[in-house]
Image (cartoon, rainbow, N blue to C red):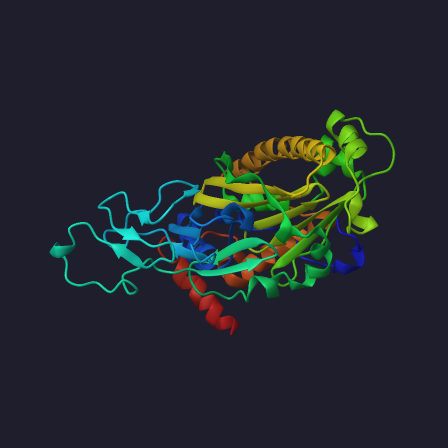
Amino acid sequence: MLDDKSEIPADWDRSGLPGWAYFSNELFALERDMLFRTHWQLVCHISEVADAGQYVTLDIADERGLVIRGHDNEVRAFHNLCRHRGSRVVGDDRGTCNKALICPYHGWAYNLDGTLRGIASKDTFPPLDPDKWGLKPLEMEIWMGFVFVRFQPGPQPSVATVMGRFDDEIRPYRTEDMICREPTNIFEAADVNWKSVRDVDNEGYHVRQAHPGLHDLYGEDYFDEPYINGTSRSFGPFKEGPSKSWSVRNYRKILPKVDGLPDSHQNAWVYFGMFPNTVIGLYPDGVFFYQEIPVSPTQTKQRGGIVGHADESREMKAARYLSGRIDNDTVKEDQMLTIWACEATKSSAFDGIMLSDLEYGLKTYHDHLRTIMPILSQTTEPTEGTLAQQNTALLKERR
């Protein structure tokens, strides 16, 4: 829910996105080009590439990214694409290369700084410049210990600028000093449109009914703030009084105090959203970060990881385990909700949705989508083959 209902206009559009937006192939292609390739994507935490040769990969929007630390201790990002025939240079989600990246297809070798190191049967090729024929670099930014990449130039400024309004709140957690506790990985997959996952994640109206564990932790004081300039914030202070859930009861009991963290956050979970698909959840015991990976209009994977305090005590480790139990239950509970909501958009009885004031944050997220893709304001699906063209025309009209 919102912390201040005065922020909600007296009369606002409660209709949400049109049903066709959740299964359109043409819209999915437009989202690939206008959202996921041109907006920052979280790859990993810096601790996951702590040593020379360590790498983490990211596949999204028909793109393949690779983040690796070089022998010079520099972290770099590249397209995971061999310059010879386009094979993946590394095929795993993560790993360590001791000296070089060796393409598994024909054996082209690259130094950890991306330059071309060697070619099998070199005499069958013309002379190739090691820099020109090295791995293609990706735009990369490290913010608060999190490594982001962008596959193509886009409308977002730097991550530091986008997330800057939260710096003072995030800094006491010292996220850049945390270490990997659960490596970034695909932890969930469902036959739903990626926006269905975002929809359920961008409002807390359903928490009381659908998430008994979370409601036991927060009570009635959880609130969502609207999306503003590409970011959102949700705050869940722990409720007073006894808890019914074993996990919640013991989590609150065992959770140690964190040095340097303000009293307001010692017993609270806070979430920061970054458009279009990234969430960073800060808990006293660690940080859970995740994102949606669209696979098709009706298939989505969730990818994320967990970092924790480097000097984690036994009590803090136990608290992190218990917060993980609460989160795992929440993920499972949300999955069926997203499936049912996504199914509904294809029903002959579906004629749109009605949003509550408690879902105003979701409305502002939809507004962000409509700003980039004004075609989403149309209640009926565009004629086949015309969606991208119509969207371009609408953008020109707006200018």
